[in-house]
Amino acid sequence: MDRIINICASGILVCILAAIALNQINDPYDSRRKALEQRIAESGPIEESEDSFEWQFDEWNNSILGKTSVWQELIPPPPPPPPPPPPPPKRPDVAGMLADVKATRQKVGDKIKFIVPSNPRGEFKSVGESINGVEIKSVTRTEVVFNYYWAENKENISYTMPRE
Image 1 (cartoon, helix red, strand yellow):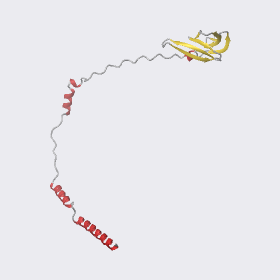
Image 2: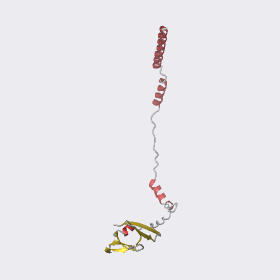
Image 3: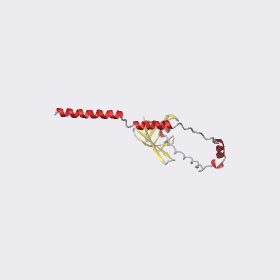
């Protein structure tokens, strides 16, 4: 059995070697290569001649730019945008209006003592009175609530100040 396998393998090897030798001797592309080399040798270089025509760029440019229709706008420009609306009114700073005012813990009846820049010794005010245009809304033991009516927006702005 081994002998038959060796004989078959040797036969296949001989066939492959014979095919390689035949391919080297009888090249299938050799005839194509020779025909192509012959056609290249027969054809010579081709000479190109340029036209003696000169382009008249300056003349064309002047004739185009000389037309008035070139400079007319195809679509008129859009109208200028409307001016922006005015900014909304700025909210008043109630804390800034009452920056120099201090509410003390001193009390006489319904009035408490406020130290203001116009009177550094202090003055007594009650609920409903105003300091720098800001009305006192309510008074508790630890804080004073102020109310400012913002006329432009028709809004009440409240501010709480601790008592010292």
